[in-house]
Image 1 (tube, rainbow, N blue to C red):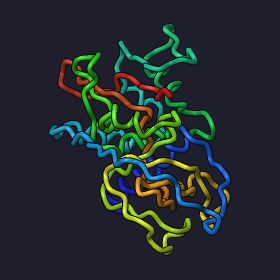
Image 2: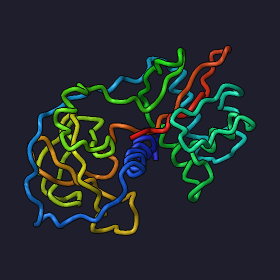
Image 3: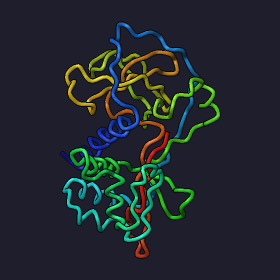
Image 4: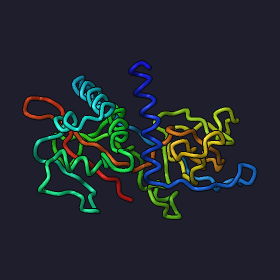
Length: 260
């Protein structure tokens, strides 16, 4: 597989992985029993472009290679020696007595749950976009959070659904299908706007894994349908943060755990 194909494949796995972490897999009713949801106002959003820095692209490629090889020593040299931060560490997993690399491994759950952290690392390496962290000059975090009118969003979110209950496509033109199958009829094509999550349903050809789950969503029109794994992102996701050292080399500087 060429590099571009690898990145797209990892990105698809990444988006589902992050959304699944925020909204657990749920059993859903069959398409025949679905009813039209109440329409809501379209809330458009924008996504920050990738940093115009070739060295950042090279760093992400190196990070992807390290994630694939799974050699801790290689990862360690990509993490800042001092000053690593872990925002949203409500479980108090950060240990000031440990090294930056050790705390990063804990934040990303590097060797837990069948070493899911390495897969997470590959996923983060696949995100080209990143935005500046206002509270830490010189630090950028990826993936970038979508920008939208939060006042208007609060008006449509009358049921006070948590951020995990809303998704968005990272590109326009995502098909919403009648059933969780790639050959199913397209009910609607989604643009760059928020979409309400109704749950997840495994593909009819793969019931064994949450990573094969299709998102069941309600579009602003009120129509409901299914979107393929990896095509949608939650409004809030974990972020990996980077900064340059004194020599101008990119390093992993911190981790942001998404909060509800």
